Length: 189
View (cartoon, rainbow, N blue to C red):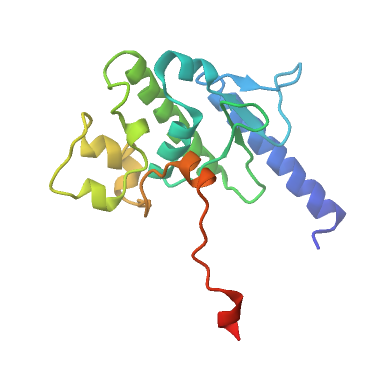
């Protein structure tokens, strides 16, 4: 439906966006699979393995923290375990891409605070993410970091905030203990 030129334009835009992200985030995260000119294809793979070894912060922790910024988690551990694969599409605006880059830089700063001892290794905004409105407005706050840090890691979120509806789930447990709450097919008759 896009036609040859539309498909070419979409492809070029996605490749440009992935390279923009890779170049902007390279000072903060190692980028895998870049070519001899430092360019990537339509995806940018960030390697968090060394950060995980040094701080205990995993790619899953980063993915969950991105939800506090209003982003869906990128692909984790594919094609390399311990990585995040960012695949911007042609429909992402530069403003949205810049917002994502800002979130990833702030998250890297939070990881540095864990490494430097400013944040606790097990009770920090990354390990506690995502933070729901219910958790943040509860009478009790049992964390060593502030509600402010949890809810508003960047000032722009004070004006427009996505509130994750559910806190952290135990993904491994869910994968190993599947259940279906579906209505039996016989009920549809």
